[in-house]
Amino acid sequence: MLEAVKIVNIQKSHLQSMYLWELDKEIQKNAGIEHPRTYEHFLNSFAKYFRGEKPQCLLRAVEVNGILLGKIELFFDGDRNYLGIVLASQRNQGVGTKALNLFLEEIKQQRNVNKVYVEVFDDNERSLHFFQKNWFVYTGESTIEWYRNQQRKLMTLVRDI
Picture (cartoon, one colour):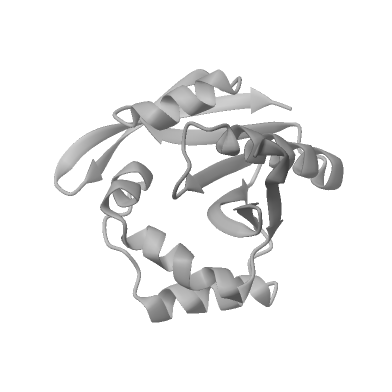
């Protein structure tokens, strides 16, 4: 199955599924989405991306055998490149690791990115485990964020590529 994992450009046909992920309670908690966007706002955001109005973002869809399973993105923030990944299904099967490695290879070759950061809430054990097994290390940086009236620690991890 892992040979069938691909990262491809986001297509308009992906958007409805991606919006449903944004409404998923577990994904909201893990990503810190306190208030999901309306579908109209979500579509407008992607319309700007498709028009090239978000040059600081690079988005890819994660597919297995042509079926959309997730997304992976890079956000350029000054001198740091932040990575995010969402897999809506087929977790713990190597799909995320394969997609991550394909994406890191792409951004290193095409964008000359040599280091990426991720921010993960300390109560998101699955994501912490995923990134740590994929050679991300804790920088020692963290902030306290509010999420639905509760404080959560947001940790920064980094990986050289």
